[in-house]
Amino acid sequence: MKTYLVTGGAGFIGSNFILYMLKMYDAIKIINIDKLTYAGNLENLKEVENNANHIFAKVDICDKEALMKIFEEYRIDYVVNFAAESHVDRSIHDPEVFIKTNVLGTQNLLDAAKKAWETRAGFDRRKKFIQISTDEVYGSLGDTGYFIENTALDPHSPYAASKAAADLLVKSYYDTYRMPVNITRCSNNYGPYQFPEKLIPLIINNCLNKKTLPIYGDGLNIRDWLYVEDHCRAIDKVINKGLIGEVYNVGGHNERTNIQIVKTIINYMSENLDKSISEDLIRYVEDRKGHDRRYGIDPTKIKEALGWEPTTLFEEGIKKTIHWYTKNKAWLDGVVSGEYANYFKKMYEDS
Ligand code: NAD
Ligand code: DAU
Image (tube, rainbow, N blue to C red):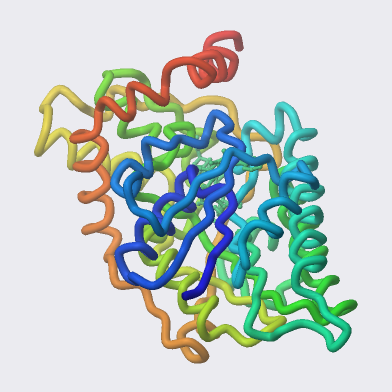
């Protein structure tokens, strides 16, 4: 029975990963630690609240003592580090917490795992630390080409810089101590439980509430979209089959301009849910500072080495996602109140 320490498991991808793993495997135990920031929500895990193989503890990865206690209490086999401040716009307004959680938090976690796992003879190579990183560490592409695993790191936002710093720390623990690690760098995820500050759920939520749809700059920036369950399957492959010390890019060649994404959502919602949702809601607003123009992942390595490929077509995934948000309006209404309402006001109404 393998024991996974999942950090940030109450957030978007972390909670999808826990639900996926508990659906796939009976004989695993998941210890989920999360600080429960504005982005962490235990409602995401309602389906597994009575599952004895899922144990939740409210822990900040910056809290060294609490982390040590977790490693003392449980015999952890794998650490899967999702915990992070994840929103680029917030990092532009207030970088500090990004450095604390994404950089120092990752280092604390590496140290706690190292203390628990290292022996005189070195590391047990069946243990592994998996750092969930992002294509944003590579910076921005021109009209052609793709990010491969050894594309130079060139982060532009404080968020991307903090994730790149964390990646380098993880790499250094492999290079220096031979600690068993993998790093995954995935493209933009979408799907259930994503916090509606991110483009796709924000547009769906604003359409549902007939609010304007903010498009940064000219709307022609390109992102490479992946349905979250495909990402979870990739992480599972990397944990079980990934070669120690390797980086794996995760993506499915699903590039779209932002305006294409927004129009796809409007058209589908207008045809299937409410005819009054229309392109009249679109507003071009001031561009994001340092806005990366294009991301595009080359997933050849993970496909050839681990046999992973995405299975959800974008056209299918976006419909499933829109239906999920419309059916889970109570979840949406819950997360947009409180702290988020203040953030949204600061972003759009004070300016
Ligand atoms: P999210 O913001 O939805 O969730 C982050 C979770 O981490 C939340 O539950 C939050 O409470 C928790 N957290 C924050 N600070 C913490 C701390 N100090 N200690 C413990 N828990 C803390 O983010 P997400 O979109 O699910 O992203 C998860 C990971 O995947 C991040 O590391 C992110 O960089 C990476 N990633 C995200 C995407 C994407 O498109 N969303 C793509 C590639 C990689
Ligand atoms: O590429 C992976 C990254 O994807 C992850 O590492 C990040 O954690 C995740 O937040 C995401 O970052 P992006 O900045 O690409 O995602 P976001 O949803 O914030 O924005 C997507 C694009 O849409 C981007 O070009 C900015 C634009 N945008 C975003 C918002 C919120 C708008 O035009 N209007 C908006 O209101």
